Amino acid sequence: MKVDYLSDIGRQRSQNQDRVALLKNGKRQLAVIADGIGGNRGGDVAAELTVQLLGQNFSKSAPKTVKHAKKWLQDQVTLANQLLIKKSHEKINYQGMGTTMVAAIFLGNGIVVVANIGDSRGYILHDHELTQITNDHSLVNELVKNGDITEQQARRSPQKNIITRAIGISADAEIDVNAFTLELGDQLLLCSDGLSKMVEHQKLTAILLNKDATVTEKCQTLVEQANQAGGLDNITVLVSEFDQERD
Image 1 (tube, rainbow, N blue to C red):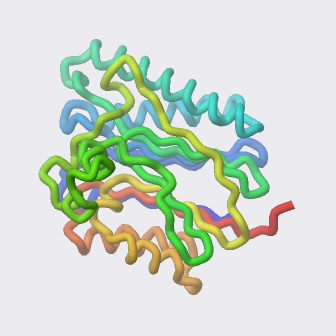
Image 2: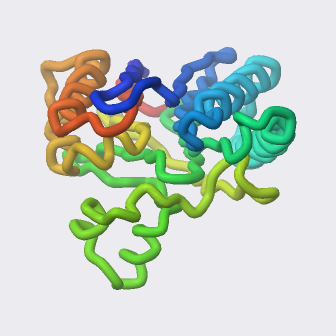
């Protein structure tokens, strides 16, 4: 499997509150992106602590099955949630801090378990079609699902940054978690909303479909496109390509 990632401050923010990591434990890998919220009130700390906790625990004991991976991800998010709430009570600057997250555990043979909370996203490119495989936990997405606004209106809505779930904000931090099987040539894209809110779906698809580009070059192009569109937020992307036949 080929994989790379890139994080960029964007063109409007004074600091990068996104965090990203890729960790190995034997044949299994964990990819995680966290997008801190709370502005100058510790969003970067929330994202950093979340990625660190998942990474440290994955290095100690990585799940081996889909069932175990699903439970492991929920358990880690629960632990991260408890940690952030504890930290937010220790320092006034940390009050209100939290983070969104999207994570993937690659179990081998094309099997990947993907979890998300908030509006950081996961996509799979299969047979020339890019499909969002995560559900945004956001106010505008609820409005779209209810038929109150269209997806185009959601992209322009002044409420587009209001999220309905996050790590560190309330006592409950419930993730969505699902398993997928990648075929030869399929790609997995994980990203913060600094990409998904700036670059149209068609353009994301075209960049991933470029057969002459490496995963590293695709990450660079995705970030460049988000910045060219205004770079209103931090931008973090991770691209992986399944380049083996399944057993």
